Each structure stands twice: as C-alpha cells, then as structure tokens.
Amino acid sequence: MADKSEKTKARLPRGFADRSAEDIRAVEKMMATIRSVYELYGFEPVDQPMIEYTDALGKFLPDQDRPNEGVFSFQDDDDQWLSLRYDLTAPTARFVAENFDKLPKPYRSYRSGWVFRNEKPGPGRFRQFMQFDADTVGTPGVAADAEMAMMMADVMEALGIKRGDYVIRVNNRKVLDGVLEAIGLGGDQNAGRRLTVLRAIDKLDKLGPEGVRLLLGPGRWDGGKEGEGDFAKGAGLNDAQAEAVLLATARNVQAGQDAGVGTNAVYQEGVGELATIEALVRAAGYGEDRVLMDRSVVRGLEYYTGPVFEAELLAEIPNDEGQIVRFSIGVSRLMTALKNLGKLDTSDVIAPVVVLVMDKDTESLGRYQKMVADLRAAGIRSEMYLGGAGMKAQLKYADRRGSPVAIIQGGDERARGEVQIKDLIEGARLSAEITDNAEWRAARPAQVTVAEGDLVGEVKKILAAHAADRAKGGA
Image (cartoon, rainbow, N blue to C red; front, top):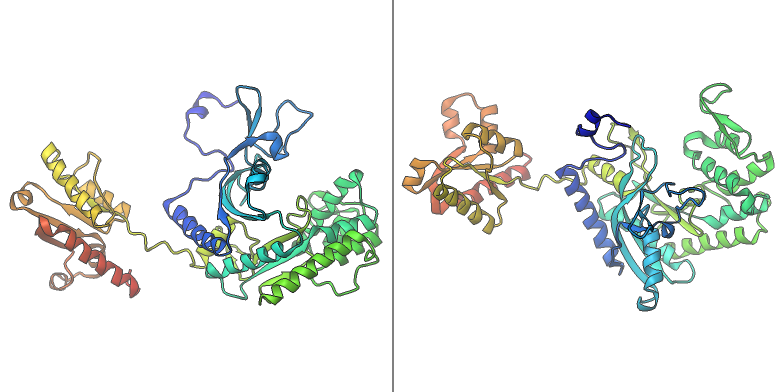
C-alpha cells in the first residue's frame, strides 16, 4: 500500500507512456496513409467502444471473483463485469454478431484504436498500445486472406518502405495443427504442450534450430549451457516428434518434406490453403520479394485458426534505444521504424505565431486578440500570450514553443498604428552566424515595423521565406 506521500506524487503508471506532439502527429500521418490504402481496397471505417462485457472478450477466470487475466476490469451498478478491450478483434466479433442481419456480406471494415493489456510491462512492452485492423467477414475460402497479404504489402510501400526492405510472411495454423495431431499432441489434454511448442518455434530466429530442438524436447538453460541462467522447461517431445515439428515449420519447405505427417487431413488442408494464397498473390503480380509463404511464422497461431500474417522490415533499423533490429511490425514499432528511416518527418508542422501582450488593459487585449483572429482567418497558426510575464519572458516562451514569428505592439506602436514583427528563426540564425554589425545590417532583417493593416501580409512573406529555406536544406 503506497503511503500518503507516494499517493500525492506525480508519477506515470508502469507500462504506460505520455505522448508528445511530435509522436501524435507522426502516428496520425502514418495512419492516414494506412487508411488511404484500406479505403482503396474498399474497406469501410467502423468503431467500437473501448469497454466491452468481460465475458465477450474471452478473458474471464471462472475460479476467481475478479476477472484479471490480461484485462483491466471493473463492475458496473448491476454487478456486470466490464473490461477495457484487449484487442480490436473481440469487439468486432461482438458487433458483427449483433448486427449480422443488417450488414452486407461479405462485410469489409477497418478500425483503429487503443487496446489495453493487464500484463507485466517491460522494455518495449506496454499496457496500452495502438492497433489498426482490417477484416473481411462472411467469405468462403482464402481469397480474402490473399487480399490481406497484398494490402499489407501495399501499405508498406505507401509508407515509403521500398521493395526489398520488407516482406509479408504468410503461414496457416492448420499446418502446425495437423503436425501436432499426427505426432500425438491433439486433444484438450495436450493444450499446454501445444502452447509450449508454439512458443519454442517463435524463438527460431533467436535460438536457431538446435536451441528450439531443446525447447521442444527436455528444455533449455537460458545461458546455453547446463546451470547457466534459468531453466526453461521443454514440451517433452521425443526426437522424431521434434524433427517433424522443425521440418514442418522450416522457413523453406520443399514438396514432400513432411516427416511422415503428410497424410493428416488437417495438415493437407493447411498446405492447400497456403498454395491457393500463393497462386492468387502471384497472379496479381506480388512476387516472393513482397509476399512469402513462410511456415516459421507462429505469432498469432495461438488464437487464429487459419492463415496468419506477419509484416517484417528487413532493413537494419535502430530502435528507440539505438539498437539495430529487424522489426516484426505493430503500429507502435512501425512508427518507431518509420521515424528512424526518416519516413515520418513532421517538420512541415509550423509552430504558432505568438502575439506578445505588452499592455493588459481591456482595449489593448482586444487589439491583440484581433491580430490573432486576423492571422487565424488567413490560415496561420497563432496565439495570444496568456501568461503573466514581461516581454523578455514572453520571447523566451515563444522560443521554447519553436515559434517562427513574434508580434510586438506597445503603447508607442499602437499610437502610430504599427506593429513590430520579429523573425525568430532568422534572428537565431543571424546571432549564431554573424558577428560583424555591417554584415548584420545587410542581411535579411530579423525585425521589421509595418502598418497594423499589413501584419498578415508581412507574416506570410516571412513564413514563405522560412519554407524556401527549408526546401533548400537551410533549416
């Protein structure tokens, strides 16, 4: 229990993150691009609430009074358990079930939003993060899955990731289900072992086949040698069973290589569906450099029953900690990768012009507010300083805001019907680069005085000069 001093201390809950203006704009820019591709494919936007009945999310623990496996939950006034959504899939399923008769079938929709996980946070693992889903409901066969793979590839390229720097990997849950059934791991009684198998395969890139073979069998020490680190208990498969799993989930499986499980009906169905998806994407012009059938993909196999997809960035890209990584992409990771690739530049967002408040009487404040209104009417971001500080502190405020221009009108200027316009960007450049007074005076002026009626036009000229500098790489 936190003491009183801890309760009143400003602190961010673990597993959550504050978002800066730059991050928000970067995400919105990225998602606008994704949305445009989804719309191009004929998907319609829809949204469901962040809160659902807990039993609809499939996360209720029947042996406890409070549902707390992975979800944030509370009771409403009629004792019903409610939870913050764990993902976007369960709310979509509930929405389709409730409105099935009214919806066109197949039903094509997309949605984005925050989801919440009541799990232990860690590096890169948050309790709140963004998802952006598209779904086709009510279609037979795997044509819709082939289209999803193609759409994901188009999204990557629309975001500026060139061909060869990404790949969409496709697998099918039925392939592994068939293998596990064929080697004797079918049925509810083996659910735990099947999950251990899935988690072992997910470590192929990290541990390699031999490390995964240990996790499929007796288990493995984290350090690689007996007694080093913690011991991870394996799935307990024998050598033949482990070989069948490794062969069936190898990245490049040749025809006929099925380690004796090829007669299993579920396995054959999964292999057939993958073949159909491949035929469809190839017919549409998407080669292996864009969409690749890859049986080593296991993320999502725990809860999907058919095809699964994984978008991977192949280029070596630094993460937030500067480490070189290859990304398996979610919205947050994709945003980080795009920012580090320079694909989410938000430098075109201009900070507001600041109108300084030199006099605080009602008439003066009205004139300052009129200046702000005129600037806004011309489409120029602007604000009147609303603090209580003097001129020096107001200019410091404008500088911290990154403002391009400050507007100054004291009593003398007001009497003459004039305003001073201070070019903060040019002023900072001149003060940093020019030391000779003559050179300073000959350069583009960092401050001009104009008639009050010319305020908007002069500010537009200064902002246009800034834009030209940026275009030349001068800012």
